[in-house]
Amino acid sequence: MSSVSHSLHASHAWTTPNVPVVVSAPMMKISLGRLAISVSSAGGIGFLAGGYDLSQLSENLAEAAEYAKSTDIPLHNGVLPIGVGVLSWGASLDLALEALRKHPVAAVWLFAPRQLSDLLNWAKSIRQISNNTTKIWVQVGTVAEAVEVAKTTKPDVLVVQGSDSGGHGLNERASLMTLLPEVRGVFEEEGIEGIPIVASGGIIDGRGAAAALALGADGVCLGTRFLASTEAVIAKGYQNEVLRVGDGGVSTVASTIYDTVRGINDWPRTYVGRGVVNRTFLDAMHGMGEQENIAMYKEAMKLGDLGWGPEGRMCTYAGTGIGLVKEVMSAGDIVRAVQREAVEVLQKSAVKYKP
Image (cartoon, rainbow, N blue to C red):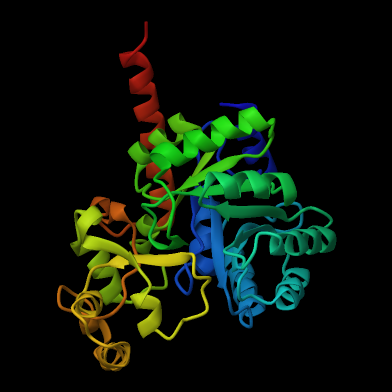
């Protein structure tokens, strides 16, 4: 394990030592306190999704703190041992600071600013009110973003997201297979050191985690896999769709239509959302007008769980690894299974190719 990987463990001291750091992604309205605390309780790093509307953040953190009391996990340096994910393009810094003063957390994950320079004020303000106890995580999707963020914002952790990820990401980006080693290589050339990198995008199990670690990651982040966790705040129809769908390279698509029908139109233009191909997308591709599609989506919402399925219209944000998700498990069991399998895969590979 590299010194940088050790620093990721050290700065999040409740994480299980001598195994890969497993992170749960902050999925909006799905990743709340119970999921985040459960992941951290299992030795991972759980993130609560704040999203772009932080009006409920203080309440959600209070609920997370209350749930934490039922677990064995202690406060970490006086703060909740979880992180908060923020969509920088729409979130209020004032609301964020208000919530974080009341309920300090171990990390804040910043994503999708309108311009990268916006991150500076967020990072500076959060570090100031927390006396640097709250670590700043920043998500990027290109080599250029990674270099600029590393040099300007100087995050404590950099999340590198590849194109296989579910939900939102840059429209133009590579998969982790090439993006991650190129970021590592450019960092070496530029003399950028000491920033742990967490890989995100298409990692579902220990095999994917081992691959990401071999490519240069210090930790791994899973989103789609935690959709099928018992702690996820998710409709049954949505979760069933995650279990049903396979062959994610063709059964999911990156598009803006799912934001359009849900009335979320403020994402920066460089971002798209990957979800399961459904009637909403297919009708849009065949020429259905936006207003008609929106109206039909609203009707589908009235169907509850029946709004999902092969002919459904409800949005199922998920990554290309969706076909590897086979069962619902507790978040803690997912963390431990990924850690265990990743270590086994790496050890077997080391023996297999030992000179």
